[in-house]
Length: 400
Image 1 (cartoon, helix red, strand yellow):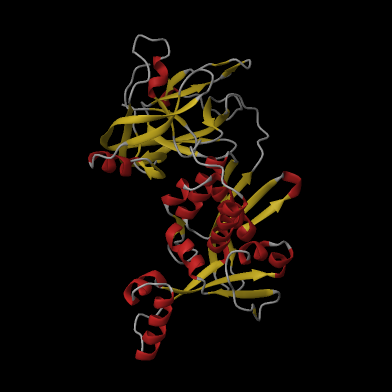
Image 2: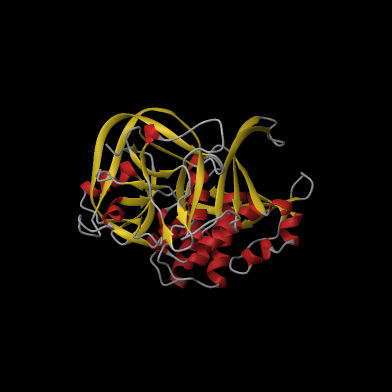
């Protein structure tokens, strides 16, 4: 039984649109008749391809194991009799050929020493998107900066006769009926960005103001902190169309962001890092600490994988808010835009740190449409695909 946890995230193309879904969500979408494709490994030279999903299998509740990697601390949860590409010596032969070895999870070599089995990760989930331009990057930046440093003020839904007359005038100027204009206005009245003087000095605010109108900044009592206010409907709609949630605890990206352009995705991540990231020059990485919001935490991992960045999960820590004086738990990541690890064929190998019990959970797996005949020596590539964390895993069919 090749089974993965139902909450395993997968980049998938569903009815022609990219997004990130859990295996359980893909199970439900498949039952609705949706056409699904996922990123897979095509051949021994590491070529990637998007492959059609023939079926999604539910295995019910199963005891699972969590495989955690030593460097990135990325993980995958699978049944102990799942077959996974792993090998204790080497996975690459020169620069010409990828050597694949397969083991059951309960056979993986995991000790206290450094010669544990290794797992294959893809360096990038390739999305077939246009490159985009500087404007796309700047719009993405404005969105990412809002996710890091922004909040919203909701609009009252009761209007006086005078305000309705005024709104009706705005609607006529746009050639719209009043109700259509009210819908267009959305429930957000105001976007508020809380920024510091360095944000002005580094040009972050100029990037955003190039496209959206803001009122004069308001200085807070906290030293060097300012609030910027925007009622620009273009900014409001950019946020509404691409982000769910309103607070640091629940803001996260909608799947629609993965269907625009690569520059837009890069801008989102750059904007977020400008607001909530710290660049550590001597390590050439961005350190990220955010409040307990696992959906946003995963979004940062998914964006990094779509852009080809090296992302590491770090141990969380408790901190104290200077404004509320309350303790909170911070989730931590490191993002390296340049890879410094040995790689080949767009893949890296990483040593397993540990395999531990992950409890009893709903388990699923995909069945991929075969690329080769079963008697073809390349048939082992019929059953291999990538999770959104980058793991190369086997589908539900055991053929090795």
